[in-house]
Figure 1: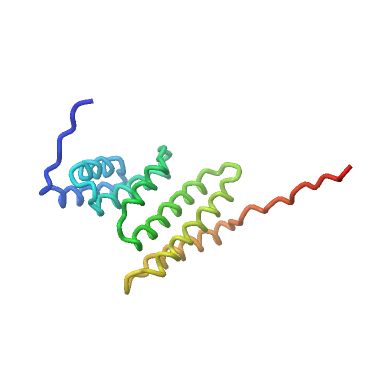
Figure 2: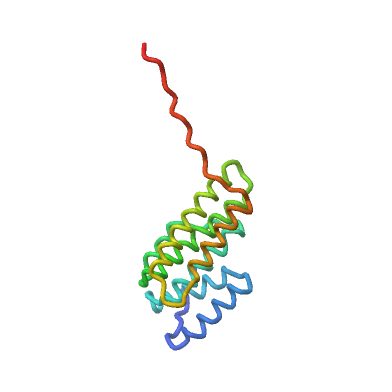
Length: 166
């Protein structure tokens, strides 16, 4: 592979705008590439970390293989506790929606578990949210409505098999 060219630090704000624009145009691969260029120059750029995380999770419904490990590593790099909890919820919610769309055996139970996980994260974020920010509450409500609309239920726990004593 050819050596990649380095972005100039002064170009980061415009590059972040381009990455967001590509996300909105439903081109997460382009947004991901731009964020990687930004993070090469400024590894702790919080906006690039969040945009990269969102670009990766945008790919869930496109059938791309996306590493949960990579997303969890990005979540660990988010400094703000509220944002880390909120985007952990976004990650679980988007994974749940992708699972629900698979229509494979067991996917509805997995989707339910992931939606509940997302709701737990959104509750954590809601508890520490900045004044006037109800984003986590809105996401929680969305998950609850999806669960209800799709009649998702938890997997029933199986009774343990008891063997008679001889």
